[in-house]
Image (cartoon, rainbow, N blue to C red):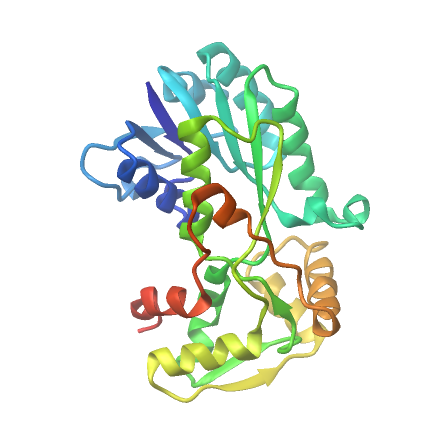
Length: 278
């Protein structure tokens, strides 16, 4: 039986493929466009468009477990296809927003929570992974870094930035052993780290000075919308960042508890991704 990894062209999905291969699993990687899949030898490539139910039956045929990342529009068809295929466990990449006290008022939380609830109602086991900030978000600074600057609102916002390989290692462990059914796991890096501190780490790793330029909230929203963010999302994100200037994001030890290994630091992430800033 195979393990299906949806979104295998993304940072987390690709890392899940690698973690499952390292664990000796038979892996099937999917994307809407299989020509964009760059996966290890021996990994099967399949087309799966989570908003096109006709692609899901062949993608899930013979699959025992699946790693999923989707919007609410695609989840109902996925649940039906997974049930028909006899999938035993689905691990979902969700968001820490669903675990926040103000989740009921959050657009981001609402989108992710809808997927969590749809999977929980399925006949298979399901586990939600709820990371907060991704270390890979700093790749959005590449154009600015080329100018020797990091532009961000709330530079002293302290977040538990997590390495994508830690998310992947947790997902792979659960997909293999079927543990944590019905749970939502809050995943973080090892410590809160501010955007200013991340910039300093990148400066050191890249060997060039980087100054930090603080954006106003309006400037940040304008940039986020230009990058294609939904209109009602940036304000929620900025609100969370504003809160963590005074009170750092909480960090958890879930990565260690599930995998037996400490979560990777932001410096480790930066060193591994040095070439991405070239």
